[in-house]
Image (cartoon, rainbow, N blue to C red; front, side, top):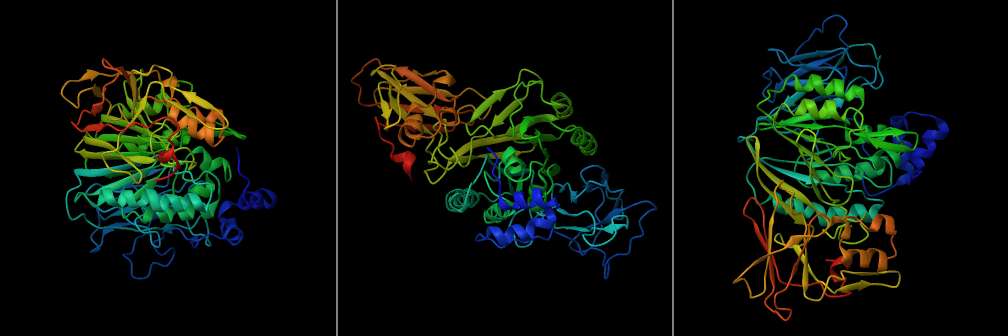
Length: 533
């Protein structure tokens, strides 16, 4: 449901552009994060002390790409979101700026640090204003970019994948800062390789420019360079256009590089009035084709967006986009939106889509998502064009916490509803939180004798759902049945040979030879884990 913030109300009533209202919105919204309205910029129209550049006739956007010593960098891809060019041997790029362009951005090349944005910690600063805020829109505008060489190769690097942070208020932002951010920092501290993070849309649930600003600063607190992509709430809760998101967080479509991987972010939320569907606009497809013209086909491509594509052939330009990235080595799709984890193998294009559950779980209403998975995020280690490791980090829980067990006759009830597994007292049910998110079928087994012998557990229908979390969200907390009955794509069962067995152990093994085990059961009406850490 749409949230009419003060920012949105002013914009509709006064019919002013989003950028002109940011300051007014801030006076109304308050919050603990000072709003900084200026975009990253190179110095605007004042070229004092810079290498002199005379743009070609008709050019309206140009600049110099150099390293921190002032040496020009050739071949760096630069775009205003419509045109895509590369810097020449003198480090100069030139663009005829599109009238709709708000930003100019570089596709940060491999081997160089991702620029950080002033006042926002490690949040990415690979973009700048595409024209003067106060000057003539037809006057050539200069925007320079300075890059620093990485101290080590980024051929091997770490990637954080965060689905739906989606805060509705300052309390939710505080939880993100005190639950999610420390875990990202904890994981990052274990590695000595370059790293980057992507947030897969719905950066807010309800809010305005202030909310985006607070989340931007929170991402910057991780110490990891973070990029974001836009979700449906980032439009519907603010302006339906994505302009406010763009003004605070940066371009809605862009690219960057790490090692042998080309990352592409796209906006796949198409609104018609107050209704939305998935798909990619024609202008994005035209930009993507130009962007990929600079990428050799032996590179890996990671395309990330918000709404899962699955096999929804009716989504605008879905086939065109997937056709383009399918030419590349190991094309990989990452998205979120659903608030549950689902490994999806497309019938078309034979691509694997990683659908990430929400970092906020079930909208910050507990510590778990609607599929029973704890709030958390995915971590990927990439070497060359291959993902060589993948795992899930549950917020504020042990790194090896990956499984929850229930008894087949368990009952989870509250004043408002009762949910039962009802598959028999001699059956063990296991929710293996992110089984299959590596693209393979995990081996999930049960032992009745403390690990001496093992039996294979079988997958349960996804429609069965996690009855424990439904009992809490719907039965205890009275949240809506519609949103509280998520499918669960990673739940298993096994009938005991000895119903009196006391040495029950469940283990799950993924394709990277991680072995996770669990012996503890969540007994009937034990909601301790859902209520807090």
